[in-house]
Length: 301
Image (cartoon, rainbow, N blue to C red; front, side):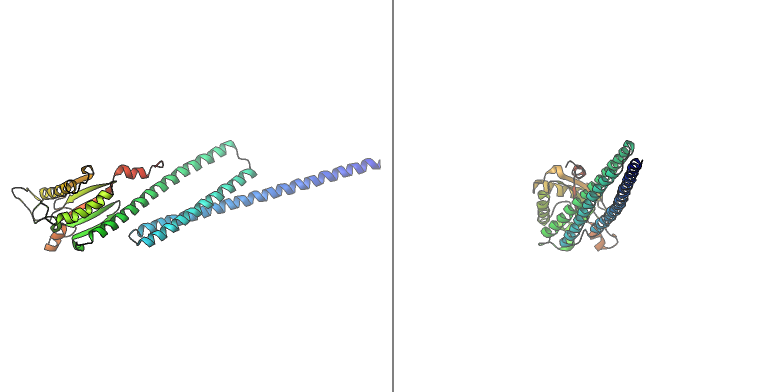
């Protein structure tokens, strides 16, 4: 009788010890699972924080668009560093999600919902990055173009007669009327080829741009045998510049647009001779073709 009692005692002890081991293993796995979940939440917060910092850096970069080249390069380096950190955090997040997946079993429906949500977020994130990249590329191109125009036109031409500025997605060159025309005339002066030739060099170096020439007048009425009014004068001045760019400087006419703005869209008041002189101008606008801008948004290109 003693032998069976001892045997039963050993069996009970073994069962008790196995139960303890199972509970410890379960408790360990539960702790590991909770830690992984906490790490995942922390990683998500860090990703969001870096995204916010990246967005702020993008805004600051936009405000510094006219800054020096070194400042822009420094900002670009900071943005690249933030993007690299976000990429690293995303990789860490994916690994932690894999660990969580090993510690818990999700239903197929829950998995499908998560995959669908992540796919939607990925598409939105990709589109946002495409737009940011397109805007950044356009701004950089226009800034470089404006710098080149300023350098080319600075020799032998007074600063007050030519103004270059970047406005959104285009580069504009305002040329005073005395640089190109005689008063009340739409025939190009002897000095016109000097400035138009320099601008044509830049235009020829950038075949991806379209060129619009706009003619402007002051509000002093005109009526001659050749000209009906200021609208007529502004259009004829624009077409004179277009013909010179095409005929003399061999710019592809498919890229050229002539437009007259008359006495409207003034830069300043016409109440003084100086104001009227400022408003009498020819504007050359260098702008990207729409299809090329849309190409920037195409992920395949």
